[in-house]
Length: 206
Length: 206
DNA sequence: CATTTTTCTGATTATGTAATCAAATTTTAC
DNA sequence: GTAAAATTTGATTACATAATCAGAAAAATG
Image (cartoon, rainbow over all chains, first blue to last red; front, side, top):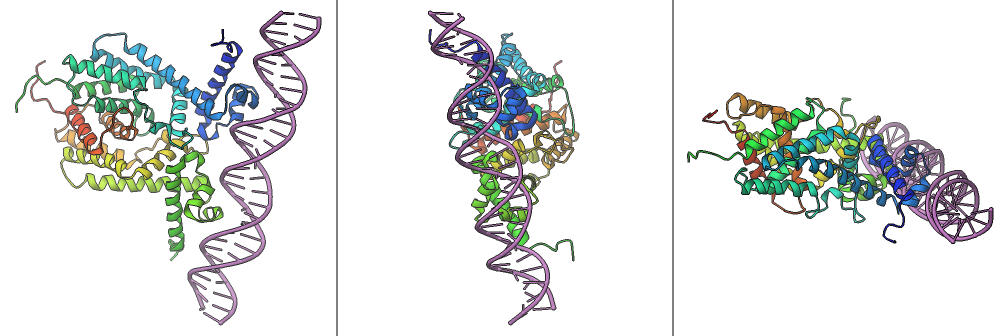
């Protein structure tokens, strides 16, 4: 009909251009990732990018959306292979860190966009209130809430605990300096720390 | 003598230019922070920036160094007003988050540089191995190690625990979406979580 | 197979950039 | 107070960028 009149080549090219954008961002960073650099990597002319995307901002935003969708799908699929909140949390942490380790290019591109792109009013993307938009944060909060209800997690503020977990996950990619550790070990350690922090006390001595 | 032959006006101007650079980075971000934008904010000509700094890269790097020094001084001073590792850790967390809350411009500028600037070989700054260079990470590890030695902290990997703490601190600035919380509350919550995660068990039932 | 529509390119445009330089101005030295 | 050194500027340079456009090439249509 009309909803998907433009598909076939359109979609293929858009995918190709987005893929080249991801590669370019990882290679040379947001600042140098010009349309000509992206076009070079896609082996097309720069004008073709302009044909398929309204402008550079549009390309970057569609690229970001693709990266968010891809990582969220990867992580949430692995998360929900089990039912108990404690296992889901462990899976969530492991999958989040594993995604970084196995998709370095996508991860680098995501970082570049989030920390560089701004709205027309110069508001950085990372400061934008994504009111419940972030599917990963939402899933994480759901898991924590369920665990709390079931009496498995002892947590006062689910929101803060979620931030601590997100922070620990996000920190993994910044490793590489004074000490190095593989993704699996790091995941296990973090999971242990979080579990301990939420452990339900059996005896009260106050 | 000769070591500090060029001071006075030199240093004053450099400070002024660095201050204007911080303001510009916070206002419009790294990408748009051109020499002319910085010059405009400092009410000087662009050529004067080139007179005092070798090139744009040099300016950015000196700006980054100033920002790192300032935040480290702020945080470490507050950290070491006490002696016990547990109190030092609480102070460290509180000061780190308080710095973000009270120095939003400096914090934004720091982020912009770290996530945008790259070496000549296109290696992003945030991926650079700062082998023991980061004074905050070093201090944090020292505190954790001392607490471990004194039997106050039950922690298997000091490095991972340090990363979790750094992550929780760094996550504070990304708050503003689905829920908001003031710096003090967030600090308290995080400190409680970390303390719980490191609590020494009094009874073993395994 | 002819024609219409879509896809794509090379060249061009207008704009912004970092950096340089000769000359003007201010400060310092004597 | 004057000469020398430092600081500062406006104008210019060479270059990269995003975006546009007319027309070529390819694909779809009848």
